[in-house]
Length: 132
Image (cartoon, rainbow, N blue to C red; front, side, top):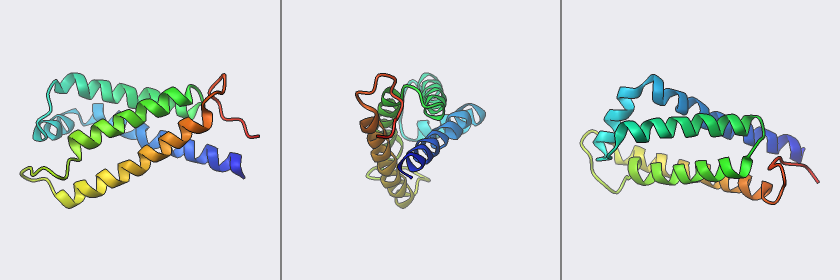
C-alpha cells in the first residue's frame, strides 16, 4: 500500500507540472501578459525556462528518475512563482486577491509534497524510491 500511494503521489505531482509546462508554450501570450501585470522582467527567457523545467522535471518524476533534484528544483520554482505571481499582498488591476491567496496556499501544499518526495529519496544511489 505504501508503494502504491508513493507512486500515485509522484505521478500526480508530475502531471501537476507537465500540463502547465506545456501550456506555457501553447498559451505563450497569455502567460506574458500575466507576468507583465506582476511587473516581472526578462519575460520570454523566464517563461521559456519555466516551461522547460516543468516539462523536463515532470517527465523525470513520471519515469521515476532524479527525483531529489527534480523535486527540489520544482519546489524552488513554486516558491519563486508564489512570490512573483501569487503575491496576494499586492494590488493589481484586474487581479483578485482572494483567488491569489488561494493559489498561494495551494502552492505551499504542492511545495510540501515536493519536499516530502525529495526527503523520501535522499541518499538513494539512483534517486528511485524503494520500499523497505
